[in-house]
Image 1: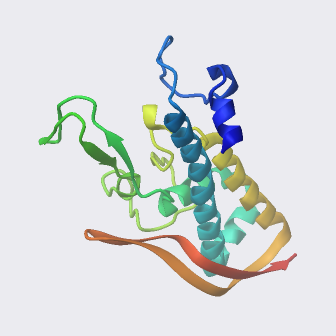
Image 2: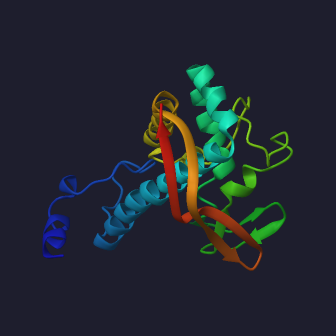
Length: 209
């Protein structure tokens, strides 16, 4: 903690994060704000990737024809990667604070109140996706918002895409079959819904080629 405090008391250039849309001459971040952004970057790139990787491996175990489809033509992997992240939607929603009084679809939102950007709901919008509950590895177009959109776009999206594509490539090259030995789904429970987001426990057997 002492080391962190010392670093944050130095000039801002020694403790910085690339913040999209931050205007020139903006007020420097407070220590608590720096810690908050650092936690978002760390947690945002940890849980989401873990949940996505587990979800992909479990799905391939249950749908070996999907693995064969990708192995048959590896050029399908980028498209499949986008479909996996849409269908799994590792982040259900994220909150934002409304800076001014506004109205969203007829609902008045006072300044300072919180609203939710529900990515998972948008990714299953039947007006945007044909049979959204179905995983289609060749789905095109695929206007999902699993990584957010516009000023709310995930800063780690490019890295996440690389991880998912590399995972699929290596599984196609090196794995003959996948088998789930033990699975305990991780479920978000809210008054309005129950939704699986990854696994508490996932034990698998991967047989090499």
